[in-house]
Image: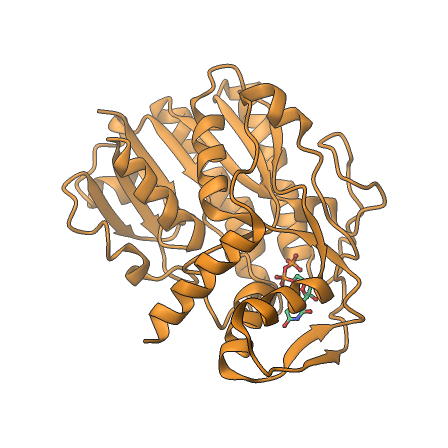
Length: 321
Ligand code: UDP
């Protein structure tokens, strides 16, 4: 049986990925320090015999962490490295933690991969493009990041993570591929982590003001989490993507104003839209060029935006009940 390690497996994306991997018959080791992930995200998989949860920081010596958890490190075939806080609200509160998780933590994962000869998928981000001057963003665009900005802990942390991932590929022969994940949404996003979709849904359900930052003309492209998991698994499975980097995201670009209107109409709320100062370093536009992943593995998004929003609203409602 293929054994897969998922770092950050108790987080929003990681927990969905663990579920999909178990459904596909994999043995899954989920490693998370639960700084932003939550053990309750794993409620549906905990009882599965093929699932192991290890509460540990990815910066630790992972060979020792696995042994302490009664896992033989040599059993690990594949590693999805997702561990990192990813919410802009955390960029202000935990900048060092974020920078170190993506630098030291990524090195620690790559060391493990080199030792046990495992294939790695590194979860990078569209944030490596910063506030992009090229639109849409292809992988060949090197980005526009302020190294001293409030988002730099994440943006530069992920950029450094990409650097050492390619070093371990070139110099140590690690079969590592990188994906740049654009905005993703779906059930299990934390309502309190400041990200726009769970924030707007919660505000609309509560009948409170919907807080648009800036003038709301900034854009994002939102991908539903099941589409992302499908892409991650296919990129991992492809034998010839070692050393490569691929954008994963939706090409449907929406303004934050139109997102607010869509959520208002889907929830049928009396909430009013109110305008607030734009946070520092907030990118004005973002949309991936996904031609590379389309050609490499034939992937494209499947879930329509309104359908994904309906499912997310339903899950927020269910959680509140
Ligand atoms: N945003 C907003 N109101 C909120 C939260 C976020 O208008 O209550 C805006 C935010 O300024 C940004 C966009 O929504 O322009 C997406 O923010 P999010 O934090 O979800 O993701 P990121 O900025 O990392 O793409």
